[in-house]
Length: 398
Image (cartoon, rainbow, N blue to C red; front, side):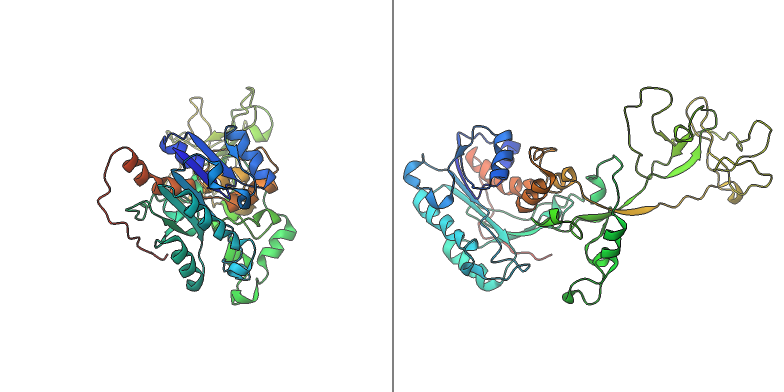
């Protein structure tokens, strides 16, 4: 299959084709952003570079089977000034129309943001098919609603996979926001917010979907901020010698502390895994020990002791023996790796450029699993199968 990708970015279309195992003979890419090209070339050095989309001519290419594009959205987006085709960036859409007519591909796919109906109607008229609107939250941990115009028949909504932020977070400990950033998040946001704070609008819990990634999230808060659990220390292992940090026992319900090189000496993080009752913890003088390691006469809590078999003593239902632990929550930014996972891009695919550029191109990119969902019907047809469902696309709102 020969593919022509306009506004190729970091070659998300190529990732989707590879994920499905669709063979690609030649992949032509029109892109001028040097950072996106750097990432694309690091992963796919055999891509044929065409430069500026305005300079691409069908006569210079072999026959194209698939034409794909995500034309610049700044003129259409509700987040912008909505200059539509008066914005020279969004006017590049007509380069897609030109090459669609010149190349006459067997299949095509165009992606763009939610927009006013009047803009939508112009694109639909030019392309000749009705769009389908898909929220990538169905296949990822990110709310990302996009329109897709394609002549690949029978495209319906993907099945809900139930993925949330918790499923894509890194396990390492990551610094939270600065005091200045926290104060910023607690202030009232823009005029349209109705008095809500930025925290109310932008911060997501790890059991929710993230906000839509944007190309501006590298500029700092409020973009890409989540509330996550701190590691929960629920006790101390008294039969381990050394610094207090080596004795800490963590709950499996929280995040692990940072895993270092360990190198023996009980340096690995400890986690409660259940076990038999061992009784209260005592010091060498026979006095009960509180969870903070201080010996006192009257106790209201029971410390969790790590036994020789690496099991903790059990937490009982007796009130005075139960250790009450509340999850501490802090705010932090999403990492570039987590943003890759939100876009269902392979881990570390973009780690060939600075973090700022990684954030920017991921915000501009496609959710790979949404694109593979669309390409599956094309794959079925190419392998000799049939698509029984009609081509007409249903438009669903979320």
